[in-house]
Length: 195
Image (tube, rainbow, N blue to C red; front, side):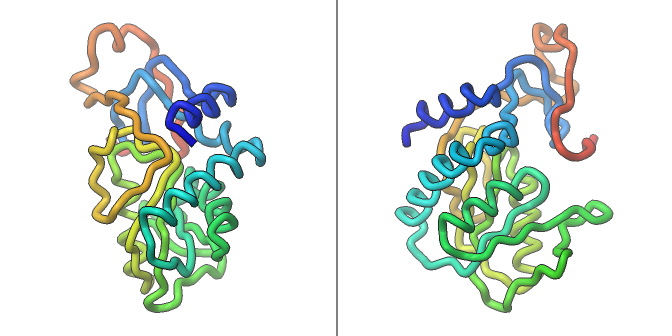
């Protein structure tokens, strides 16, 4: 699947939004990728994750014991990636600001985990999830996401396989371009902002 084919899937799902958005990171952007809209069509989600699983197998050649994702955005993508990879999938939830395993989930000591995200922007959530996996006893030799909107600039500490890489600009709150600042901002993210 080419990057353009991935973007067609997002556009068809009305998941590539244009306007003025305040991202979960607190950064501002003229574009937002609403991955939940892409994944609400199970066939589309399976197509995208099958292509991502092929890329992961080609680029991260070690076997994985399980998939682990941060909630909320990574949950659906993580479960579909677990299905595509033929391994169990679990997710971490934020409890008092810290990613935590709940619901009876655990990671066997030394288990190799593929950390799966939907969208990577700054890499902060990915790094937090990787740290939580390691703290829970897992090993993280690599990670993947549907879209790396940093254009490859986000450093998450392990190799990151992305189905598509886009260089979508982001701006600090006090550095928003005048043209973007004139557009009312919306906050479509799944958790409260850290300003």
